[in-house]
Image 1: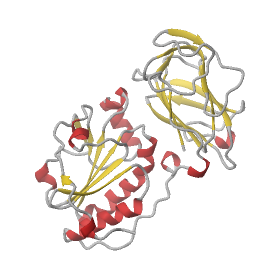
Image 2 (image 1 turned 135 degrees about the vertical axis):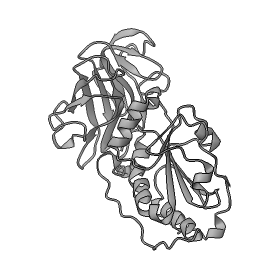
Image 3 (image 1 turned 90 degrees about the horizontal axis):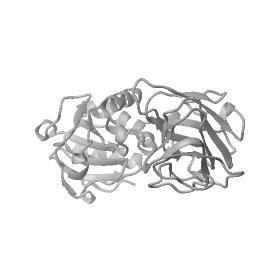
Image 4 (image 1 turned 120 degrees about the vertical axis):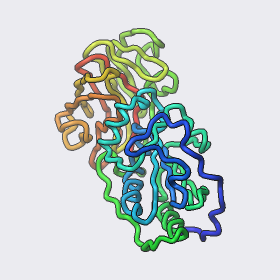
Amino acid sequence: MLRHRNEFPVESKLPTFDGATAWLNAEPLTAADVLGRVVLVSFGTYTCINWMRSLPYVRAWADKYASEGLVVVGVQTPEFDFEGDLDNVRRAIKEMDVRYPMVVDNDYAVWRAFDNHYWPALYFADAQGLIRHHHFGEGEYEESEMVLQMLLRDAGADVEQGLVRIDAAGAEAAADWASLGSPESYVGYGRAVGFVSPGGVVPDERHVYSAPAALGRNQWSLSGDWSIGAVPARLNAPGGAISYRFHARDLHLVMGPPAADTAVRFRVRLDGEPPGRAHGIDVDDNGNGIADYQRMYQLIRQPAPVGDRLFEIEFLDPEVEAFVFTFG
């Protein structure tokens, strides 16, 4: 249940967006531009699955309440270097149908001004430019929308009680939390766990890896000619593969070629077979797909029942970089 408005004390003054690398979908907004209007600031980065699953709600609020005086500002603060590339960001937010103003925050200036530490994060400011509420992570969408309605009414808007109804699809669909048994898994050696190729990691050097005879749950391996760096692993020759035994409805991989205007063909297998009905939105039912820039690719969405499955992705072209597996 939503707390009474008096239980939403002032947390801080709404920071400015000074230090932004760029603005997309709008001219730069100053404090004077938003004074007198309720402001929702949404921090994310375009490969973050948790941010993607919150996006349908933020998008719907931006559409529904714009006429009531709401200003939504997205802040794109990159986790990976390639997420600071403006061409990548422009392409991603267009594909994701993000129409509200977006701040590109490559230097973390806005992140630090808010003292933020999370993707996604929401900050709710009233018409006096004071932050009255925040929410970190996914969920609690009904409470968040009711906070927006309360702040808009306090600013004089005539807002109806009803809440948005979301039927999210694709990567934006809510996770199957009850069946989720695999954690976010980084591929670069700086944060990797569960890597079991024989001989282990050979850091920052070209090396031919092989897969073990079997994988346990949440173990993974490489095969082929790879260079494992602190952040990504890079494939040096065609035919390299990644194997992962996972337990989740959805499997995603942040990956892609680092060079612009390059495409890498890949083939996905589930328990040694084409995925069929279990294919993700970036793969056909035969397991074929193309990575044409660095982003998150949904490779598996399996129908119930969800169990331990062996995922394999083989790259038919070289020069792909793999960053992190996420699940849902």
